[in-house]
Image 1 (tube, helix red, strand yellow):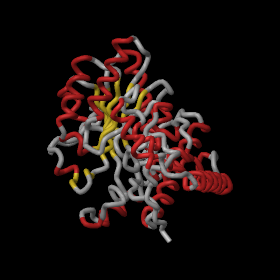
Image 2: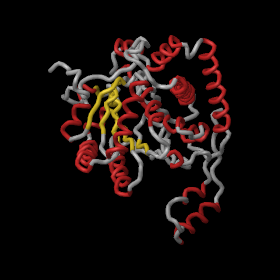
Image 3: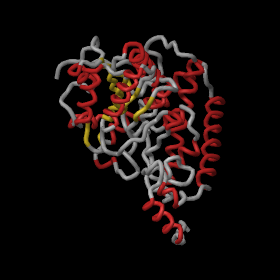
Image 4: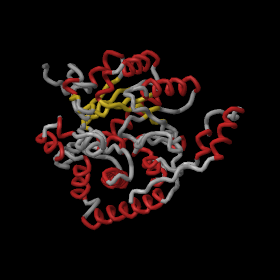
Length: 370
């Protein structure tokens, strides 16, 4: 392999805070923003812990955690404007919470109950809402990328001051949708940012088995797209790189491809057993690079947080999650008649007949968990 050239942004690694929580260079971000960044990352970590436990208890059928990858979605959400649109993959739903979506409604999607804005029609951990400009995503790998590029092109044609963010994992770079999106973005100069979370694993397929390219960011050159590689466990660096890419897209209508180098410290989802393919020593090494610990260490050294402040943050988050779960778990199942909503603007006669027939029958009694 050729040695990495630190002067090439697609081969180097942008970093602001090192693995020990020490500033690698001056950090100019506002302290309040950094504390909020820490709280948001800590919140989704605590939510994931509570929800994975509920999945194990049989209260929800499926859940996808983002353990170890919190820096990317949180920093990216803080780096964009409310008018911008997000086209997520599996591990970006927390962006909705940062952008103001209510936690109880977000959790309701996991339960698929009447409080879910998607009316229980999507599998768990597939949150989306027009209210925060976050588009629904598919478990099929990659189709959100042409959507993000297409939406950016539409915004450009309409003269809208909007940037789109399209997310992908390292595995999606092997899909045709990745090629189509990158090629289109490069040719038509669409105001978008495609952000790859290289967490080293496409479920059980390692990144080394995914590409022979020195880095994923290097692929951007072939498409005529700006590429940059950033430490995905450094929330400050991710924020700065994403913010700069978004502002560049808004100003010039040119796309950027970002590779955020991180690691999935937990299972791909609640259905996965990572011990079958992840080396325990790799997991241990990456835990020492935990993005939350890194930012916390920096903020404590800076004097922005102390033990009392950290405890207060955790207590506040715990109270928030508990209250949201009480509200969510008290919600009923979606109304049966809602099956016919959102199919046609005006419901045709045959669906009206089917709805009437359905409502004649008493639904079967649900069995509790005992």
